[in-house]
Image (cartoon, rainbow, N blue to C red; front, side, top):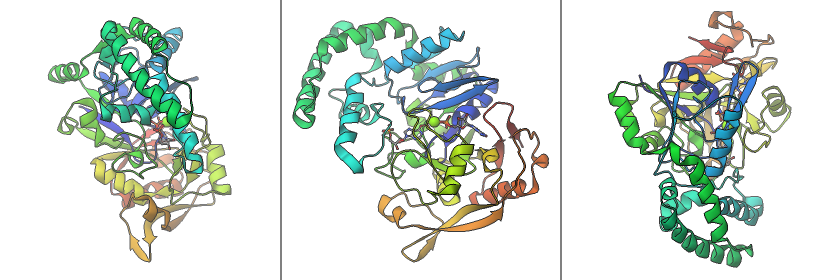
Length: 424
Ligand code: GDP
Ligand code: IMO
Ligand code: MG
């Protein structure tokens, strides 16, 4: 059985926790997109792990982990993560494979990300400053892109870096009045990356197809969320990759028909970090209640997340375009204590009612949400193990979401730990 886990909202849905749980029944966990902009939290007993590039299967000692072609890999972050886990007694030697064809995020990409955001002032995207946009631009532009396989031929890489540094220096000094880029410094960095990473590099597409042929079960782990997808999200307030389920086949080099089940992860409410339209946002005491109770601060940047009601219009869109089979709904516990809950079941845009999400920014910012209001529950549900033991109003809330989104909610999260999960 091969599964794919993907976010249905604007990222941070709780994919890390769900992947860690499902990894118990998988041989291999694959990160197929995004980069170190992701922050996936896995909580095991009293230990918390924040993973940016490594797949959320790494915590399980026998799980093989793969980072495929479409991930933009920051070697510095990758090495830091590998070493940090090693220090905690989790070794990745012999069970982590990184694609030789993945593009590399370099220090100048992160610098360019920051300079570009600063130059935009109040119109900035609110990126994670992890160099994602500039690296993906170079990937699409091709001529100045660097890939992991470049670390295997340092002589050729030295020449490439010379050309890249000259080109970037011209842009940095002319456009941003910033310092030029030093080719020798880059080369020294790359030598140390090669030193530490060569043993992990392979052709991951060949590797995965061999494993599939051998009957291994694979879990594909999405990064970001469907509404941040470069082609199908709330452009320009998106990331630079296809972060919906549609990005999985291209990202991994494995056709979608080899995946038996697409699982969409959503929170029982909605959050967003960074700028951009957010129709159900509650910039008030409700949003603050959710932020405080759900600890809604970014794993990667520490920024407070914007919070609002569950947007069933947006979630249905993500389910539809991603071919989602079932939903994992987390953070139900965070809604405990609210008198009443609202669910957005339709939008009114320019006087017209619609239940179809429209990602175009201008229209979305003119949206009025049409809500269904239901009674909340006061009980602490963080130790509930069976659906039948949830308060009736919590059960009703789940049924309401299922009826609007049209897919079963098969997994319910009532806390960050593995044990705080209800399976139906
Ligand atoms: P990801 O990027 O999709 O992996 O999500 P993040 O890790 O960035 O953010 C999700 C946060 O919610 C993490 O801190 C998780 O530990 C936490 N979390 C996951 N599921 C639940 C849940 O059901 N209840 C609560 N209270 N926290 C959860
Ligand atoms: P995970 O995998 C939440 C958001 C940023 C910003 C926009 C563009 O943890 O769910 P980028 O750095 O990609 O150029 O930023 O996308 N963003 C995320 N938001 N979770 C993420 O990843 C995100 N990755 C990027 O906040 O709005
Ligand atoms: Mg996250």
